[in-house]
Length: 135
Image 1 (spheres, helix red, strand yellow):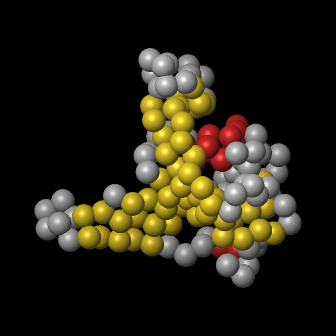
Image 2 (image 1 turned 90 degrees about the horizontal axis):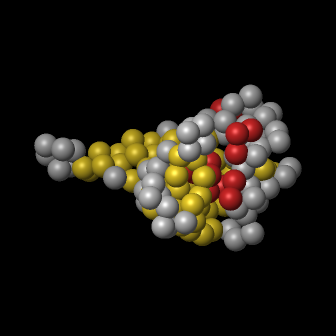
């Protein structure tokens, strides 16, 4: 299965593309954060990212998940110092779209019976185009 997302972040990652890998854990307050691999509840998480554009202190990223942990994208981007716009829980300071600027736009998987590859894709959401009109 392949899952891809658009995310608008506050700031731009130092590298234009990369892979974020670490162990995550959810605490009793429903907050997910990085932990050492020795933690008994640690779960391996891998996120690939690519910067698609920059505008006014924000960056539009394409995110591809290798694993699918709860809040994985939010934790990983915050750990890069680039929280997702509108994500106060993980460090964002702005919310001009009045929503979390994270959007699942691509899903591909083999049909469970026929094995035929099924692919579903959507365009960049209209609110995101307010900040990135050209992309």
